[in-house]
Length: 75
Image (cartoon, rainbow, N blue to C red):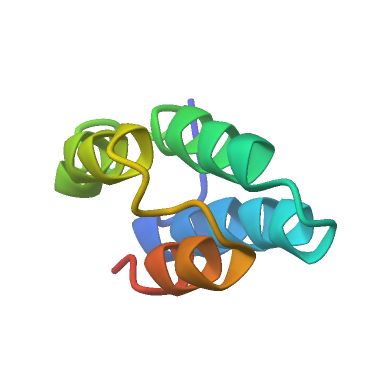
């Protein structure tokens, strides 16, 4: 059972994904964020998972700046 709140989990997801952005690895940042969101019952079906997939595979999250902005925009 996950004892963290939704917000705590979301903050953890963002922190981990943004570390990959700092290293210039947008693919791993995306994979980390999407995977980590599914690990908490309150974020497992977050709407941005589908939106992120559309943006990512459409080439809209290629730069680290675009990816970081997308990740930081989660709520």
